[in-house]
Length: 389
Image 1: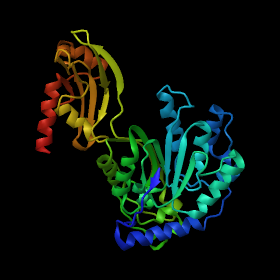
Image 2 (image 1 turned 90 degrees about the vertical axis):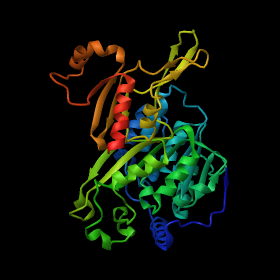
Image 3 (image 1 turned 120 degrees about the horizontal axis):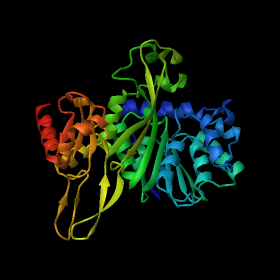
Image 4 (image 1 turned 45 degrees about the vertical axis):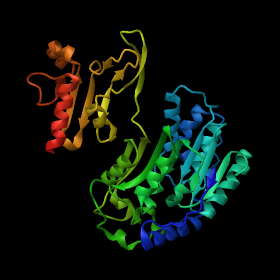
C-alpha cells in the first residue's frame, strides 16, 4: 500500500476547504463520552456469536456511528460459507478512532485492516485502544491508520479491498461523487461496501434554523448533507449496484428543528449486482455457470435494464455448441420511478397463466403490464417504456 501526494485536496473549491477544516477541528477537539459497551445492542449481539470479543467501555466511548455496518459485513461474509480465518483487506473510510475495525480485527484475525480518518486526535486515541486491549501495534501488525480526508481516498493505491465500510462520515464530504468514485476504484470486483450515513428524508433541503449552526453543534447541521434520493443516484452512477438494507427516520425535534427530517441508512454497495450461482447442462453436455436474478429493482443498478435489453439477464451461452439460453427462469422486475412492477415467466408457461396468477395472489383481470410471458415480450415493453418516458 502506498500513498500518493494529492494537491487537489479540495475538489469543491474554497467552501470545501472550510468545511474540511471545520470537520478536522471538530474531531480533533473530541474527548471520550459516556457511551458504555453494554448500552450498544449490536455489541451484545456480536458477543453472543463471538464470545472472545473484547468490548471495553473506553473503546465504545469513541464511537460516532449512526448505524452498524459491522454486523452487515459479518452477515455478508457468512453467506459466502467461508472461514473466518480467511485473509481479507478491510478499509474503514472515515473510521475515527477505529471502533468498527477494533471489532472486525478480532473477528477476522488474518485480515489487514485500514482506517483512514481526518483527525490526528482520534487516530492517536485509537492506537492506544489497539495497543492496550489487543496488544496490537498500529502500522506494524496488519492494522494501519492513515490520516487523510475522505476526499483523498485516491491517495491509497496498490491495494484492493474485499470490504469497505463507512459509518456517518461521507455526509461531511462536499464532493460525494468524487469520493464515492474513488471508493469504487479501491473495491475488488466481487467486494462489498457497507455505507452507513445521514441524509435528508425525501427531497427536502435545509430550511430551518440549523443553517445558523456550525458543525461543532452536531453533524446534523453540516451543510454537506443531501437528500437520500440524490445520494442514491450518486451511488448508482459510481458503482454497479446499491441497495438500502436499513433505514431509520430521525425526528427533527431531536436536532432542534421543526421542518426537516433526516434518514440514517445503511446501503450494501457492489460493483456488480449480487446473484445466485447455478450450473446448467447444455444439450451438448457442456456445463455452464449461470448468474440467477430472481428479483430485480432497476433503481439499484444501471446494469439490470442493460442486461435485459442485451438478453444477458438470467442467460447463458454455450461456447461449445453456440446455443443460447435466455427464456427459462422466471423473475420479478420493479422500477418504482417508472411505475413498473411485473412478473416475467418463460413463454413455455403461457398456457399455465391462470394457475400462476392464483399462486401470485392475482385474481380477476391482472393490472396492465404486471405479467409477461416470454423474455422478448418483456424486453420489447421495456425498450418502448424507455423511449416514451
